[in-house]
Amino acid sequence: MKRYAFCPVCGAPLDRSRGASAGHGMLACSACGFQFWQNSKPAVAAVVVTAIGGTPHVLLTRRGIEPHKGMWDLPGGYLDNGEHPEHGLLRELAEELGTTALNPWLCAVDIDEYPRDDVAE
Image (cartoon, rainbow, N blue to C red):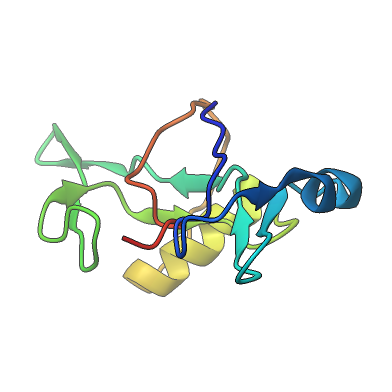
């Protein structure tokens, strides 16, 4: 995991004692007070498979937002705080496709890296 020493907003040193004492993965800028959260962002994705004329098909969606806007992707998204992955998957399918899964099950867990969305450029 990358460790950051300086504020992405103003360049001043990050105050590690404030974040470490809170125990929540948050670092605070010693000068401007910017709160830098360095934590996992769990997400879910659905592999929706159906048979059309006896041939299996996998449902893909086009990303509507960055990163990778316009690219093909599996339907899904970030979990809400404390949300169980299977519940999050059902919520995401309802939001994105207007449908529900009959038998959702957790089939894999992995760590992925996205461009740093919590660092101002």
